[in-house]
Amino acid sequence: MSFSHFDRAIAVFDFGSQYSQLIVRRIRELGYQALLHQPERIGEIGAPSAIILSGGPRSTTEPGAPDIDFERLKAYGVPVLGICYGMQLLNLKCGGRIHPGTTREYGPALLRPVCGDGLMAGVEASQVWMSHSDTCERPPEARVLAENQDGIPVALQWGEGLFGIQFHPEVSHSEQGDRILANFLGTAREPARFEIGAFKDRLVEEIRETVAGRAVVCGVSGGVDSTVLAALLHEAGVNVRCLFVDNGLLRKNEVEEVVAQFEGIGIGIEVIDAAERFLKALEGEADPEEKRRIIGRLFVEVFFSAAGEIELLAQGTLFPDVIESATSGSIASTIKTHHNRVSQIMELARQGKVLEPLSDLFKDEVRALGRALGLDPVVLGRHPFPGPGLAVRCPGEVTPERLKIIREADAIFIGALRRHGLYDSVWQAYAAALPCKTVGVKGDERVHETPVVLRAVSSQDAMTAEWVRLPGEFLAEVSNRILNGVPGVSRVLYDISTKPPASIEWE
Image (cartoon, rainbow, N blue to C red; front, side, top):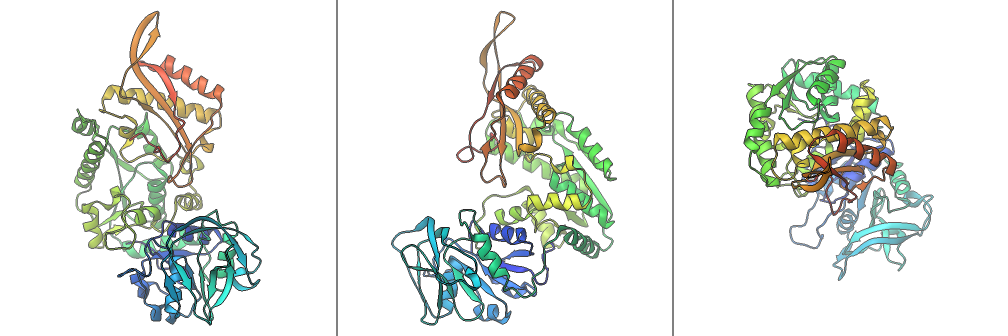
């Protein structure tokens, strides 16, 4: 169960747009609470202060196109904004027509307001971002609020409180998108503010009510999400048992550091030493997907065996995880299956035994929640670490020898980033080992040893990433330390690939 019933929140209905999460994020950045919902659940959203209908990949002219109960929508009596697909849907509901386009309009376009009030108050001619193929033929009574460079209406109003825009104000390419969203929010009915301290207090109260004295099991890794979750449960005073699985794929001294980290916030954790079991299962396997399957399957076995009978399972599931792991029956297609959506956990969820108090938050909001809980900034600034651990930084077969090289090189790299004050300016950094040998010269002798790759990226959401231009003198220092301090390495490389086309991790 998650905690998503906030009265007077802005309700965003998701019709499958890649930008739906971004709408919620922008509204929260403007200081208001917003929650994402599926259109078929329109009767379960409490008392919203305003409603937004997202864009989507389908056409409203298709048979079986996503729809919404318009009478129920109007019954809430609050302002409604349709974006792209949402605008076309509102136009149909209000008596207009939709014409399939022969080409798709995707990319920048010019917005020309034709009025200076309401949705367009203070908005000047500027660039917006389009992503659609259909066009709206408005009913005669609809008011045109803005046009594009060709004089085609791209913002309409149908009567009182129903607005539609053909572009995406939530993306940064729409230069005055935040102003347009703020103008719409100005029409909302006493919208709930989004303030992390009050949000924390609300979560603590709801956790206490939901747990109701039951024992809670929580898997922790030392990462930001699970640490904030454990601290939140601790703040709520519930009986929580934290389990940490050592799969043998962790960084140097990570077990000891995680134990000390949790002790520092007054939480004891149980370490399950399964390193030998994981490494044995991975012997001889080089296929990256099979490696992931082995690690994921074994993790679930080890965790649930140690947990025993579970009254409540707490997970650090975040908002993007929920959307990316959308069920097949929803409009949003499944992007990837997360470790917190495996069959055993889904069965517990059906029994009402899964607790996900962070599932309405983005990563930066989780960090803000951690600050409100008084957690150490060093803990909250920790770089992301993949679930399969060092296995994805060890292309090819995972062996103890290769893992040792990665651990030592990584410790040198991360330690240098911290010493030089560069760690917090990098979103994620690590060392990887390539599955080959390259020639080198040591002590006047030719050697064939493992090449190490360093990677440092900047990102906001891991969907895209740019490689970080670390100073040449810094890279030279790190390379020298690795070459002289890590046996079995005679070459150090720096990865200058962006995502896309490369991924952040090597596997």
